[in-house]
Image (cartoon, rainbow, N blue to C red):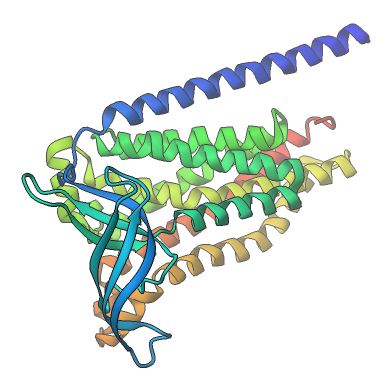
Amino acid sequence: MLRKDFHISGFRILKLAGGGVLLILMVLFCLFQFNTQIQYQTYDNTNISYNRAAVLKVTKESLELIPNSGGRYLGKQEIVIRMKTGPYKGEQITLQHSLSTTHNVHVKTGQSLIIRVESVEGGSPYFSVYNYDRTPGMIAIVLAFFVLTVSVGGLKGLRSVIGLLFTLFFILAFMLPAIYNGYSPVWCSIITVVVTTGVNMIVLNGFSKKTMCAVVSTMAGVMMTGAFFSLISFILHISGYTVSETEELLLISGSTGMKIQEVLFAGALISSLGAVMDTSLSLASALLEIQLTDPARSFRQLFSSGINIGKDMIGTMTNTLILAFVGSALVTLLVLISYGVAFDQLMSSDYIAVEIAHGIAGSTGIVLSVPLTSLIAAWVYSRTTKM
């Protein structure tokens, strides 16, 4: 018995070690990809830098309160700053700052700002206020979120944070540079889905049958999302060329070979990944608990239970995707209302067509992940009572 237990433990250690080595290799590959592939930029920003500065005092100001604006002002300020980073670190600089309706940074003593420094060959540099220095606040907010997640979720919360960080890292270091430099967005997004799903599930639950069921069903659900998005794109005549940034994408494509027509497909897969993963893992976990409570349950009974549980998930998760679209598009929708846009005009616009395609394709992936997960989990769990 002792030798058998040792053999099982040793096998698990080997699996974990192998997974760790694979993860390290993927990270190193991503770092290599990120550092060597970005070779083209649309604009030459070598003479422009953005540096942090502290506001020492506001020497003059002529401001007028904008009515019904929530405390916004228009006018001019004269401020004295001390550069905290960059080639002019430590220097005190006096500059003129204007507040307009579109660039409204109200400077106060003691604030930290981001200063745009434009160097002119043979001349003096030009300093201007770019924006508030939001980096410390963002770092504090993210850390507070991580602390809250770990405090409430314990070890599972810590694992979820690790999985989230890996997902962001993989997207930024692999998928975006690869697509940017002309690799197929379809295959790049598929690789991203496969790798991030596998890593997240394994980090969260280890190597288990529940993990296997969740990973397989998540991949299947996301692939179904991609298939439906392709069908919807064909019906609505949309592609990467119908987005508002088409001109910029054409400039990039001319130099890097980026495949613009497939970019939207990649976006559809990534945007649906989180919701499909949530649905698949939650359903796989619920069915596992049912099977452990009543090991005599048959495949048919487990599948039926999965469908019944999944019905509630469908209602909430599809609402999540649609409401996320409405929330992100709220400002644009308000502007379109002010233009008096007709219904047919609105429904035929590129913007609405792309957003509806993303929302419906993602929701379809969630809906289909319920029977897919129920089928896979019921088939696996009904054949064993020990997980």
